[in-house]
Image (cartoon, rainbow, N blue to C red; front, side, top):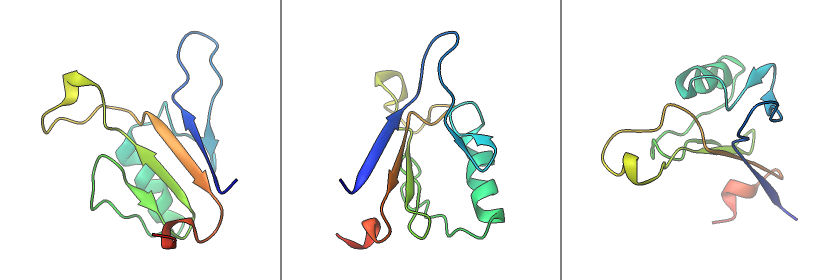
Length: 91
């Protein structure tokens, strides 16, 4: 296994997914990415729907459903991918 992708938990009492004290599904995406930058991580936002941090090997998805087919982005991350070092250089 080289990576694990966790999806946004739904419903009351759903589990939290926390990175460095930040709940990645309950915190605004811009705030999550800013906290990563503040920690020294390189944040690649060349695709705003799928930002990632190659040096931390963590990636996010906020593609959204049909209601977000245009330029609008969901107000939350839908999934987070955590991978082994070097994952983003395998392409």
